[in-house]
Amino acid sequence: MAVCHIKGLHIGEGKPKICLPIIGKNDDEIFKQVQSFENLKYDLVELRIDYYKDIDRSEKVIALLKQLREKLSCPILFTYRSLREGGCVQLTDQTYIQLIKTVCETQFIDLVDIELMSGHQVVFQLLDIAHQNQIKVIMSNHDFEKTPTLLEMKERLEKMEILGSDILKIAVMPNSKKDVLNLLHLTMEMSEKLSKPLITMSMGQMGVISRICGELVGSAMTFASAGQASAPGQIAVEDMNLLLEAIHHD
Image 1: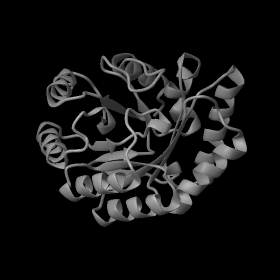
Image 2: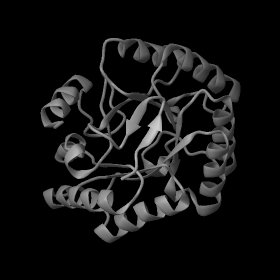
Image 3: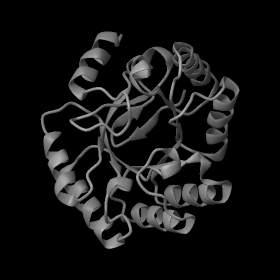
Image 4: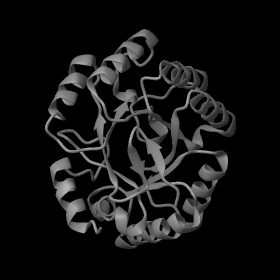
């Protein structure tokens, strides 16, 4: 598995990197969350812009990112999560493309999330926009209802790599313990087969183990919470650090 290098962070090497979500609906909420990160140990942040009430005002989004960049030295992942994949708002394709173009051109972010299921034309445009601006791409797919078959998940991860993403992400909801084990088995198999770093998780309480054991099976990043979770099953960042350190081997 290749390593993705971003601002001194080596994603795909050593312990899974810890990402903290920022999910405020306005500037005050966002910067209060960022302030609460001050004494926490983490590797990068994810700005979930679909929570932001002014997502449709480019000048507000740019000003927000500028301030975040000034306050944070770690990599910033910019994510618009669509309604169909568990987000808060559904943008039109054209609005989605324009949002990502505007944000990438600011150079205030380091990574951008692109949803695999956005459609070929949209995905190709977004990948081109990000890479032209030297922004790394996490291509993602989320299923909040079920765990797809092993074949479906394999095909999605392979497609993400073929399309040219830098990091491949899949998050699914388990309906049984077997679903969790299938996801872990898939992760180990695909981390050995594919050349890009993987992020996988089985969501909800049943899938918590998948957020912890990434170093064992090949998942390169995990999402933890600092007060507010952005997805079911996220655990507190303090607990995550203890668990990852206990599992880590030199």
